[in-house]
Length: 497
Image (cartoon, rainbow, N blue to C red; front, side, top):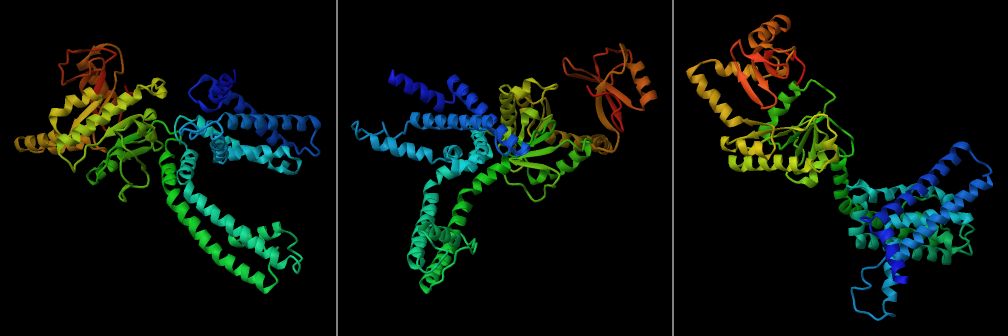
């Protein structure tokens, strides 16, 4: 019975993958919300004095938190207890020290401090219950900024322990020395606590001035603490700078994931030769509220305009796709690398398309989309076009073949390359695809109607079911209402398909 109870408590407080843990977390979160609501009500309603019923409920909530913390600490299983072969009596020390270290973890320390308000003299500490909201980081599916910071503290515990040990030792030695030197001559130093307070204020260079040494020995102690304080601050600056830097960088990387952005365009991959793509894309995207995000495994280059969002990450890794909120994007453009062989660049493009499609199948947001994510991939070697389509690309652009084809055709038919360039560029008559404006009719009748009413030149039709394009069909071809129209115009004149 005893072992079964211990296993149940351990499951309830330390096994996030179990229903019992989730149920326990739900109860705890209900109590947290209730306590914070009471704290807010007290501030808004200005309860003075506090009603007895309010004090009773508040103390009951605090007692609940105290019991929860005690059960969580008692049910914790220090890993060193069973790792080494010890006698029953020999396990007592690792049991105690392991739980003590567990209590000193940041989140647990916050919880313990928040229940100290049960002591009437420490009732003002009730405000610390707001910090219990930080426990929400454990209920998130992805790492949050707080998770990264706590991990940095945990992984560099020895460094922080050394820094706080130096600060604590200096405070105790300096404060006790000032008390011994001036407790009989300085009216402001009436106890050891006054000396400790003065030493801490001096070491941290705050200098309130409420306590100051009056004897030569006291001033000498103060001078030593001032110099030691500079070294202590420099030590903490170095520790924080080296340990928190990566966490701060990760916070910056996670800001887009947590932004709630939707309907944005993601560009996977970037190099200096793709700089022109940004200018062309800016002309094509007429919705100024639509974000364009560049997702590449490198630091943001200086030539990228500030209007574009940059996220440092690898689009071939499923674990990093969430950074760019790919599941909420309207389109993804995969740009081929120019600094490697075409086959190598295409292999990475194909892997990126496959990774995105595979990752989307497991995302809840992908199933709630009105339109599926549209992926456009750049391929440098024509042999890999079908591979890219098989990997999940909706449209494949053979940039190398297209460029060479324009060059070759321009030799036999001068001027055609310039015309095609104008068609592809924004600001001229560009190529568009739209819905058919009416019921079933012939291609010739449809073309004349669109030309006369919308001043657009129809050059073909597309069957959305088979994705087959028919350019310059005969006028007698019947065009159903479900067909899509391919046309040239200065701007879109038909509804988007």
